[in-house]
Length: 277
Ligand SMILES: [Fe+2]
Ligand SMILES: [Fe+2]
View 1 (cartoon, protein in one colour):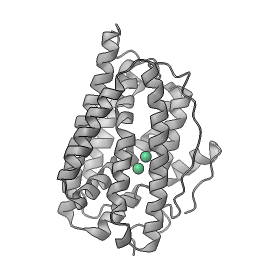
View 2: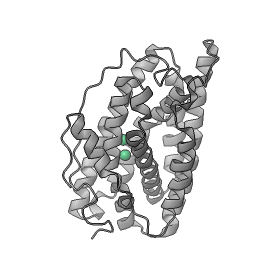
View 3: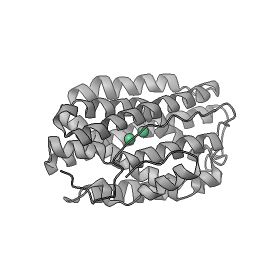
């Protein structure tokens, strides 16, 4: 049983393992703009531990879903695991540049995964995962569609983010579909969206602030130079405002947003094998 429109979803989710070299990435790799760079770096800092949390949250219910969805979930685990490792490779470049990310990551991982995660029920963790995967898929679509990475980003980070974006679009429905099987109640979905949004915004703000504070201590003053390199307005209106509005529709499903072709086009152009639908 599936609630998605026929043919709109990737049915076979397979991880890919590209290599990235971040040695030549400059500190303000997004068009020379400290603010745009650190806003994106800030959410990147949340990814590896967040993606491992997503995997834990979904894996718990693997034996409660039909074999086709369980197979998709295993593909999702493989993709998220590779994303986490690739982003941690990028963290090494940030560390070499002097950013105090180890102390931030230690605090974030303790707060999010030693305090908040055990306090939430397993089904709420799954609902948070489904909501955050919804945000990730919208951001992924923007990264592929809007052209701001092509126009302004250093090529190594651009390639990392665009590969990640494509796979986020491929597996965007997995956590949601597992949640629908385990607990289809609307209030569970809303609770996951509420807690997920609060956590994402809080940790993202602290991460970005930590990076910008370091820049300031290094003497950076023009934070908004080339400030239009990051569609901040789009982040507020499309990711959060429209994202929440869509997610709260009772008949919402991730596949209602038609963006698989966008991912497929990039994967083919970049020399990756596109997913089967
Ligand atoms: Fe990911
Ligand atoms: Fe994901």
